[in-house]
Image (cartoon, rainbow, N blue to C red; front, top):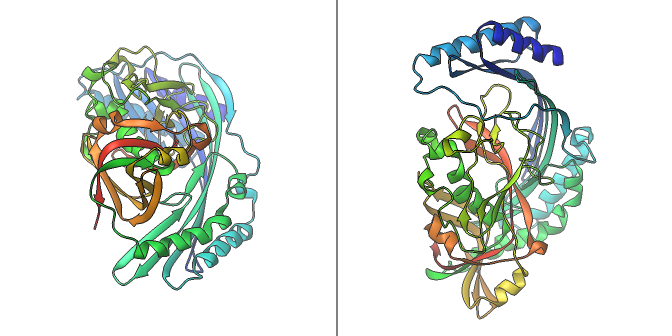
Length: 481
């Protein structure tokens, strides 16, 4: 592979590039789904291709191909330079890359059992077993159980002398039960909604997760929600469990912190950000107990890697410290805009055929103290909300509304009744400033997000968010009918 990488770099320089990098990627995917006792999905894919990115005349050019041969690499390198020179005719400012040391390294995410070496029959046996438990009651009209596995082998090199080989492996799975009674439809999911939980691990993740053990509980909760009262409307203290809080972090801290979004480069697709550069390092994002860390080194995170697609080494740093905003998510191209001398290592692409852009890494709310039971006992009038159902947030990541699958009304320190369709809404800074309690390490968990969309053309990226249950004071809650 080194010869092919060097060939691309030499060809790009020959045609006029001042900088070039190439990524060759072999990507393997497997998805399995059982729905109502029948095999719904069994997809296996294996792709190989490369993308070449260059700077010529101060502008970016990018081209890619699925034909990995000497002649094709030279052809695509020439094409990428041609595109950069064409782009330069309209550029306002030249590309400036933040310096990064030269890296020559091999990095592999840790795993015990390669899921691609586990038989399809073994995987389907587990999915059918879960599905059977979910369908044992007539009121469950839809039962879905699924698994997903991904393995990415990447070779990357640039004209500065960096050569990196990386292997990333992740596994995921989950299920849901949909209960129906006339027009009343309620869903419960495990371990989380939208496909379940995902982790940068091998098949040991599936074996170590109590899928079967929780299937009966999930089924019964879905049925119980049919007769549960609607969530009360008003201002109450809100406790969010981990998976819902992970999505709250994703939407109201992660996305607003992407520097390309802040600068308006993402406006056409999913909006910009309220977190403009005049607020940098001088904005109280949350209460004093809110500490949020970006970490592409944390074990098992979906955005854990050795190096990003700029060839920048993985890092860990505070985005919010004691409530004060500290750091944007940056790449080598934009770091200088905020006066930083080095990228924060957040540049990633979806496969070989997309140009890298700023993507979230693993972003976590740091734990403080205590258990969920203790937090409930300390709450006089509140709602505990579990497992995301729907979400909405405006184009500047300020005003939001979330609905969860299930809630519990809390009175005088006790859960008094289950409620359905619980909804809460808020304004991002005011919401995080109202956080007055976060549970401790024993409750903290990384929650995987495998389907974050961004960009035009659209790209998908994966990341994880660590969270322990937390309480937010005087939040507007209600019912989403």
